[in-house]
Image (cartoon, rainbow, N blue to C red; front, top):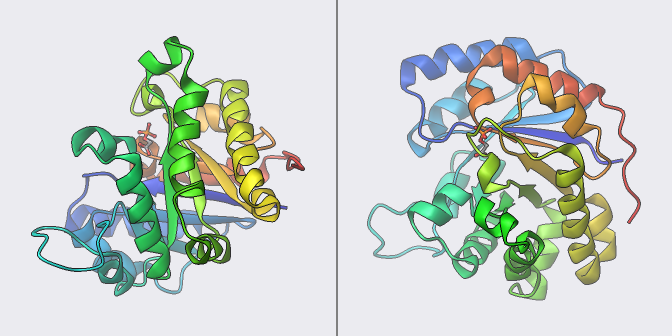
Length: 264
Ligand code: PGA
């Protein structure tokens, strides 16, 4: 049975004072919710604050990216080992906003994925097609190529680490992120099945346990239908993670959803 995972992606929002209020509220709101794993991925400058406030609670924390390099003369870059200093459990890798804004390629996302693992941190590897790609009927091909970057591009040792550290995949259709629409639950389910099948070709055991979470305008209103799909193991939550009541509801719904895990 795969435990549901709900991760808040704070993006470039926050400030010391408002984080203090939001995190304090989240701790109170999520304290008694059992049966799932919860995390927030905050901007780099607030990792220390997240670590300080969340240590010992049932909320984990992480960052939103890491450099594809281990160290070096890369001004303004942040390495995986640097975020490990703040006891991060997760790093979001290959988010579509990074792919769009900084032209993060499949290859560079795969390198970031590997760096994250080698620093002992669980990557949340994001894949997803644009609306133009979906309309052109190539959504499955795009996601397959994004997945191939890690499935074909990683050496055996790194792939073993991915399994050991329970690497997470996030399917986030780009057209549903920060939008008024979300993928329909069957649409998302079909992509999650594709992703699980691709992983199964490389490692059938890992495919059974890997958590594939959905992201793109998840709200308390649509979370129930999305999380009831058998291959959707949780959510990557943007806007709704900045509202402590909405985030709480989404976590509650995830933990009470009665989906049977698929048995690939
Ligand atoms: P959203 O963002 O929930 O605001 O659509 C999700 C994400 O970008 O991870």
